[in-house]
Length: 350
Image 1 (cartoon, one colour):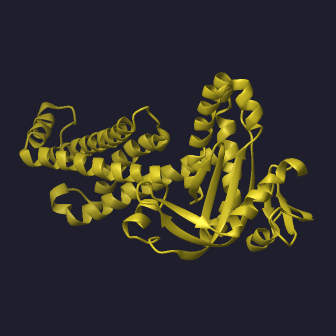
Image 2 (image 1 turned 90 degrees about the vertical axis):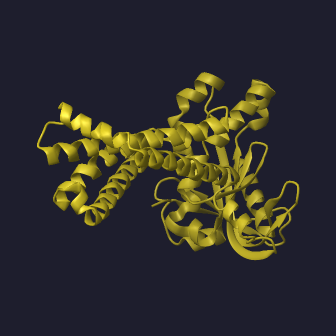
């Protein structure tokens, strides 16, 4: 099973588990209102919500990208709200049908539902639900646009004063970008870079990474140490991104006549993290680890490898198949040689 299928299956399991869990809790408090045994109420309410939200999760709205960012948020909000109302209508229909001992499509059942939905409390609740969903989705969208965790750190002033941290950094760069820019022209190459970086979003979120910044066709990605080591996230991102691009091969070949490749280098170490700037503030990282990670990535072409990490990072990841030591090399700006380790797909990630 590929990463996309695994993610889809896990999402559906989570959706149904949450739906049945919330239905169970609601049934315990509203057993007299629902008027059905708890086990039946859980099925009656949990199943419609599980099906509706499971269907919505399969639409991958988190990957939706319209020209207008506001339109993207609105589509997400109203799709989720439509799922809520459809699921609630089906559950309500089943509940009333059970209590009246009549079929759901009979006039008496529909008349009761009509009387409920025309009540002012129902309409106010619906409007409040839409407003809350829009606000929540907007905050999530802004947070996602800035990068995971950045909005929270800004609001609480976490990096207002410089802080020392130990982080993993990855420099990820599109292959043969100069040649591609000449062949495609600046406008089409820019569109290629836009799509390339957009497809990096899913792997970044899946591995709990943060995007430090973009430099042309290069992305600088970072993890807090424990997050990067957990499940070998700092390695998994590379292969998740490969899978994502491969799944979009038809799109890239149709629009650009090629499937872009990439190379990456990663290292870890201490950095000083702080917020700089007032007009356009950013959270920035200062430390030798960034220079070393960039140099490691720069060694990929000469050594004929796609993904290199430092021996120090490999040691932190522990013994695993798929890591090949290439020996020690001198890197520009470093007095001591650095051991480079090639990362092969097989066995390198859980």
